[in-house]
Image (cartoon, rainbow, N blue to C red; front, side, top):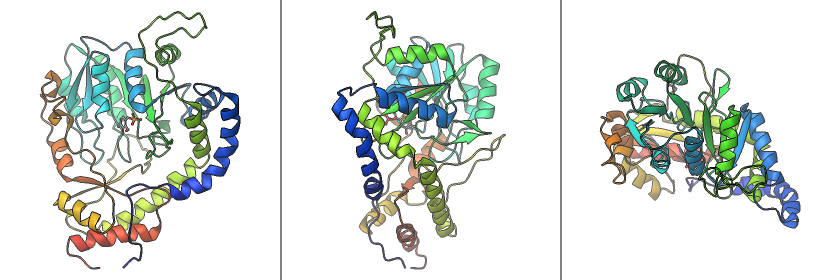
Amino acid sequence: MSTETTVPFYSWARTAQRDWPRLAERLGPVLDGGVFTAGQAVAELEAAIAGFTGARFAVGCNSGSDALAIMLRAAGIGSGDEVVVPAYTFFASASAVLHVGAEPVMVDVQPGSYAMDPEAVLRAITPRTRAIMPVHLFSQMADMVTLTKIAADHGLTVLEDSAEAIGMRIQGRHAGLWGRAGILSFFPTKTLGAVGDAGMLLTDDEELAERARMLTVHGKRLDGSGIHELIGWNSRLDEVQACVLLTRLERLEEEIERRAVLAARYTAGLSGIAEVQVPWMRPVAQPGNQVWYVYLIECERRDELVAFLEQRGVGTEVYYPRPLTHQPALAHRPGAKHPVPVAEASARRAVGLPLYPDLSEAQVDHVVDAVRAFYGGAS
Ligand SMILES: Cc1ncc(COP(=O)(O)O)c(C=O)c1O
């Protein structure tokens, strides 16, 4: 029986203590200098993320959600186009498509990876389909080998929602770089988190990168002429967030390793419980790595378990409580007509357990003990 009594779903108190002194050194000159958006720290961060991922271009944006819409518009997606997206994902994967005037066609996902099912994609393709947007969730990438082949066979653009996928690679190629472009989110709880909203677009395509950068400043040319060539947004990454991210990036690899150690401990502790399905790596055509952003289990009586854990001081998060096709804002759309049984079952059964580098082994053991106690096992 573990002795830790509370395990918040997310905390970075210890990380903050460790990182703040180094952050102060970076922040000082920014606060004194007076350039607060898209300045030196943002340029440094873009170069560092390009280096980490292997992207030729990285464009800072105000959030991952903004980066999705910017990516779609920069790729020329708009009115009359259909974009195939998974039905089990964060809302922005679909709403970004609507923001650029196109239709998100929501399809079912595969068990294990929770990523779009290539067979379902094939069934959803119509003469209006312009792009597919695979989303890499929780700890592993979509089957990009199969999906990029389908896209090539049908003349479709691949745009990746790699918001959750920093550090994930298949065959050495980083998430977001399998298609024409991809995006990252730096929401605070992400594997690389800011202290507010921040995001980034990744691409090897110079023209797309330039359009994306223009779109972050209301479509203004980058030559200082003040001429607006496109309709964009105000979506600049700010210098304070860039300083935080540069500071945290120094320890990203170490933190990814720590997440893996904790995930393995969960898996060892929960594996024997009949009612619980621990995460499993879906075999893909080419080998890839896992990055444990979220430790997601599937289980019987999920909502009762969530309430029980809460009583024991354990925070959880239900990703995602409904398939997108069942969200009132999307259910009436023409793109919501495909059957999504795996997404429905996942929405009913899945729950994320606390996972972050600061978590102690004793806290993981406390969560495991509590799950075991719920299902009537020892402890
Ligand atoms: C799969 C997915 N797509 C898009 C986003 C949007 O990112 P952000 O919260 O930075 O807007 C997120 C993160 O929240 C996400 O998990």
